[in-house]
Image (tube, rainbow, N blue to C red; front, side, top):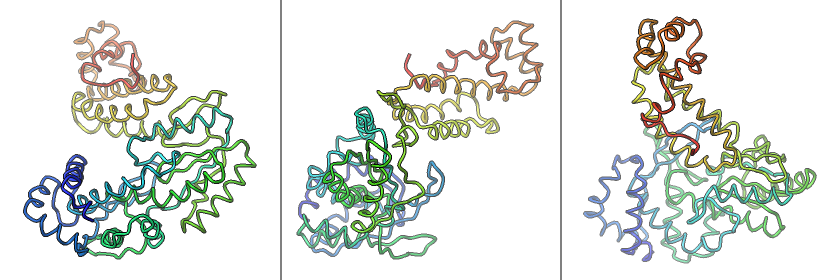
Amino acid sequence: MEEVCGRKNCQQALARVKRNKGSAGIDGMTVEQLPAYLKQHWPAIREQLLRGRYKPQPVKRVEIPKPDGGIRKLGIPTVLDRFIQQAVMQVLQGRWDRTFSKNSYGFRPGRSAHQAVAKAQQYIAEGYRWVVDLDLEKFFDRVNHDKLMAQIANRVSDQRLLKLIRAFLRAGVMEGGLVSPVDEGTPQGGPLSPLLSNIVLDELDRELERRGHRFVRYADDSNIYVRSQRAGERVMTSTSKFITTKLKLQVNEEKSAVARPWERKFLGFSFTWQREPKRRIAPKVIARFKQRVRELTRRTRGVSVETMVAQLSRYLSGWRGYFGFCETPSVLQNLDRWLRRRLRSVVWKQWKRGKVRFAELRKRGVGKDLAAQTAGSAHGPWRLSNSPALSYALPNAYLASLGLPKLIAD
């Protein structure tokens, strides 16, 4: 516990919490208010921690929509508890991370989702062209506290620290002004939760390694690569049994499958079926991308195209930073074309009347006859967004000048 409360460790923890920002917990304290609060109260808080008497507050329940539908329940700790969790996590991570499996990529220093996808691609290229795609049902809600604490106690002897970790697990959830007790699970939303999930699933990693399987795990997403469907069915049965009996977790049979890798999605990516597979963006991800762009450029929002592009560019830059890892540039080129057509159709809709449309086209250099023909057209905005008149009036260079980023480099 002395290491957790050490000056350097706490400075690093505070810097991380400030960098991550995030919303307030149940007490309403913001990240910006935390440094001043610690300056005044840290000696007393530190004393409580060292004596094993610190009591975390319940987490605040926040629900966010999942990309594939449904609701993900988060538990947001107070910023003070986030700071203490971060300090604990830094100490525990130093003890555990170096012993985690090389096939585990989630929430680990120096490791990333891109590395996990590349490793999966390597297995497929080596001839392991069937995947056992395991989906753990409500994993973060189902973690067995006693089993997790027993795993931690194997390497942590400080009873104060063990008591504090269990207190975080059992802090409860506030929803609608009422606090509900928690008997299992590790709430998503705190700095400690990702490391605890890796500790729980490290036992699965070790079992898969013992069996000689080729696998990749990112948090609770586990893919095992085999040479045949028959082998995959066998591995699915035996691994599901291990997860249920040894880890006290449940496999979601509806979402789990033995299939070809190009029929499944892993961390947003899929693969082509050739002998040398290429990374491609999963079809569901492309559909969600288009839906999000439609939401950000909804024609009825009544904002200027400049404002629309500014809002859109933030989303596009982040999306490109992750999915630019794909190896199918034609998909990104098609999405770039679709984006530009979408914006042209929005502008066309905003111009509304025929006279305004004619005047705007002429102002942008479109010939009189073509402008009149286009302005009076009965075709809808999407059809006209690809017309010669709109392509000339609102060229790619104009959209780029507004700050619209391209998804693929020239």
